[in-house]
Image (cartoon, rainbow, N blue to C red; front, top):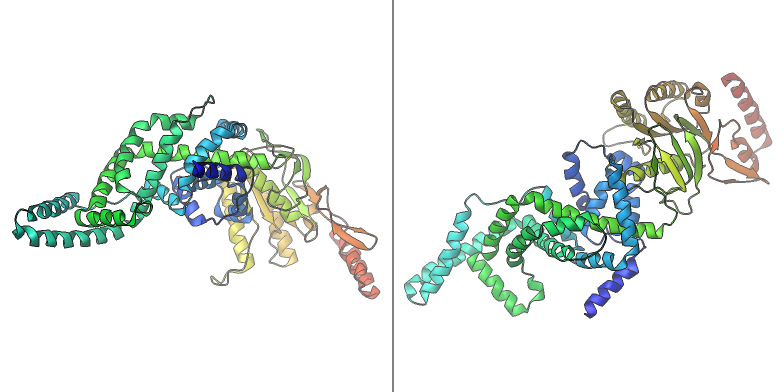
Length: 527
């Protein structure tokens, strides 16, 4: 009883808080990788996920108890959910869990046995490589019965002793060879048994709330019981036993191939009921994930649900980035075309387009945004932000960017629901060609899709003025001191502060005067 109280206290202590722990994204992503291969739905691509720092954001949202819950959250954060009803139902259920402590902790308590890394291997056997079976399964039964029969007959006639020894040695070798071969499947089945036990307990939870996932578990009770009986004998936890008893059980297993026989029987049942077992996996994983979202909502009171519109526009108030510490919020009313965003380094341009991208993805995956309110079209977000020289492949920064934006062009030919995020477009080439290529590419992307692009080239404001709205960020200079307010301002960026900053830093008057003269001349030429 004390153990249960201690576990419930732990669940109470982590409620509404970020959980710091190691996350193996290679294992966490397995379920998503399978689902993505077998779906025509749009997903957040790897480059956009990386550009927008979604691994970090995932870690903030992830309060799952189980490894399968983490895998489910990772998947839905990638998936653009077209059915708004699904999104609404998840948030509705999250609010049920926020209010009903007993219900959520009853579920979480049963998931505590699925916290170790082995839980991630359940999805491997259910959605990946199905457990292998030997070509001749009857051979295992024959060798098992032979060893048992020869051992028993030895008590009546010692001439069977050599046969008993020979079959025992053969079975030890067979056990070693096939246990190594099926190790990953053994690990998956062991943890599948934990999931089944947890599912059986969760299915018995009574609540007045209508919860579809609980109903799925109740409907699957027959197959859960059937599989549990087989796996329960197969995956005896010897670490919890008396050492002497554990040695005896292991000895009998080696001699008579008990584990391999149970493995074969378990795999046979799984083949017959795989779809139903997968449904149980997803029901439990989704419950864990929704409780995780409830905890995130509990911690972040200033979240909102989005309003989707059929018009291609975005409006938001007090939108902020969930990963940036002390993030400054920004507001825009009815952005219904592409936008060019200028300003100096560190003023907030890149963070702004990331903020928009992150929140538009969250709106369509978990139905939450970090803002006072937001109305948006359901854009599929694609980004080109983190671009680096690839020395191993001898690719320059500029060539890597050309390849990335070429993918945008190909997408724009086939669909019209994209929002492209481009940071400092074509910054790896000379000014004249940069302006020319940037203008041509942005005009093409803008024909049927929308783009948020940052640049230092204020000339683009005039080259694209009839097609793109202009916004800017700038540093503030007061009393010979400068700072950034990270607030976006509508309109073109006309007057920079770069030369003023040189003056503040006590550059020679000759240098700053000359810089101002050249700047004025260049403005006249550009305009």
